[in-house]
Image 1 (cartoon, rainbow, N blue to C red):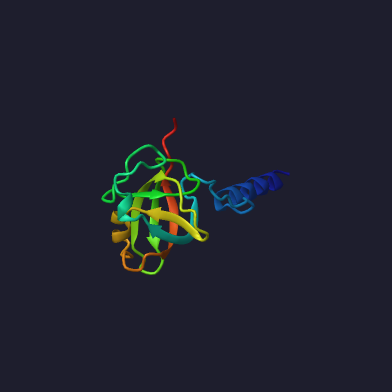
Image 2: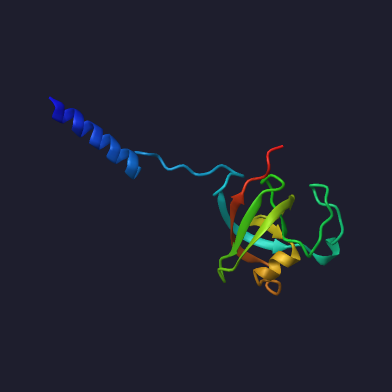
Length: 134
């Protein structure tokens, strides 16, 4: 009579530690690990010094980005899918508002991804640090 109880406990432990039977969970927008793919563009130099949606002035020399929905202050890793180069940037503005584009990067970030001459590049955007809680 003891044997079935031991087997049940062993089976439960096996399921628990291997993750079998657990539904996969995808992080919500803004949570660590949230990922999306699309195209990236970068800000024009003429926007340097203008106010962004978060209230700060845009600097083409800082590693910043615009995203439609990620909270301001979220840090993301943007990877150029053609070269596999990556850069970490902070979300400070809203946009892009062009279909298929998921992020607009500062000039400094675009240079790190080596796509200044191309203008637009396929990217993966992954949240590495959620925005600070206010």
